[in-house]
Amino acid sequence: MQQRRSASGRPTGTDGSDFNYRMVVDSRYQKVAKGKSRLSALILTQAVIQLIGVLHTFLFTSNGEGPNVIAISSVAIGSISLIIGELGRRRSRVSLLKVYIVASSIGILLSIACVATGNLTLEVFQNPSNWETKKFELLEATRTAIAFLVQIFTISTTTSLIRNMSPPKRTS
Image 1 (cartoon, rainbow, N blue to C red):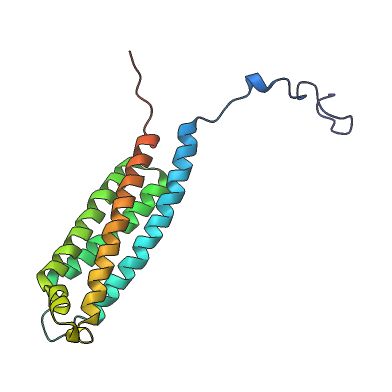
Image 2: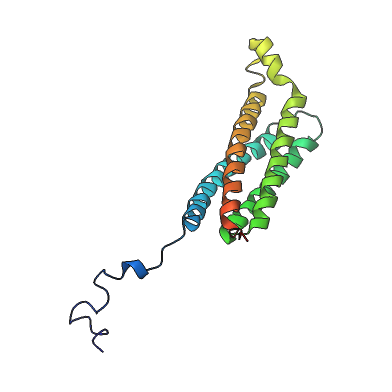
């Protein structure tokens, strides 16, 4: 009864002398929380980069040519991978995070392939007077380079997060 009354002061056993018996949060869980926070920022960055890619693919590539299948595939795979990554991060699902790493990497590789097939960046460097007419292609090349760098950080962060989410191995 004395422990339930808060008016009589501090209950017995909470004078700070019981600190040796209190539970300590394992550093692995703290690393998971930091990793999830960092991955959230990276997914948001990838979403902005992906939005720029969507705008470029659907607004600026209507030159009378047919739709660029590689660019559309890159946008579709990248968008789906962001949804999978966010679900994996929120629900702490290692399997979804692994799918996210693979799918987003494929999306970035398709973007690189799309930029590489254009060869427009080399044309602009060789003849700088074409810069005005090819500025959207240069924007796409820059977006792809930034997306590649962000992908490297994302793979590193997600791999670390997966390692910390998995239970520790028992040694026998």
